[in-house]
Length: 303
Image (cartoon, rainbow, N blue to C red; front, side, top):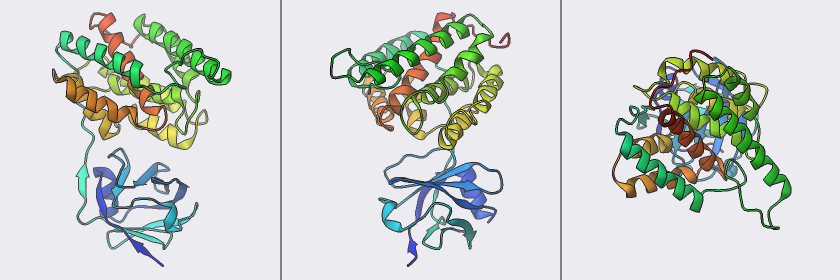
């Protein structure tokens, strides 16, 4: 039996390839809230998501609540027919009423004092409500798992070395960034998520990192083979300034004097995955701190 479920919104480039009937591939992986498709034409992963997910690169958000009940299978064929995305002859996703979403990052925050205040609010909120087990270290109580503590310690040490290298324009920045790839728990390891946040700051328009985005892309390229396919694709997109809508909303809020807006936006990011949102947020903070500590003068061309 074939199920029909409409798309609600989607990444504009993903929608356009469906409209042109130039999309084909197979199901790469299936989760309760997402199905990932490997596209034949370029080898990239694309995601069909349930209604509770936010927009993101290569993502189509649908009216589906859960995917496990649809009978889809890994390696099922995926193709386009009459402007509909067809998956394994089990699911048809019409897109004729879809909202086309495009990732547009805001300009780098111009008000340094407001940015400082908002960063302090972010740090305090993450301290109180962020998830441990990844970049955020937990307490040292007996109830904590020693392995989790050790991984968090490694993540903290390696991210600190990366920050120091970037602050001082050292060539070792690439080595330290690579050392984070694939490190930590989760479908997207914590080290990868931290780099997603860092790359996002480096991708903001009108900021001192912008001319050196090539470093982000080159670092992301090294992730292939060091982490899983899903995390690699997330890094690859972040390196060119393409991230989820919730992260974009947080970046907008970072330039706002509205504290409630900032907390609400940060809370939505912290809810990504188990510790992924916390790891991403700490990567964002790291990128902004590098800018501030360098007096607004950051250049990676010497790396």
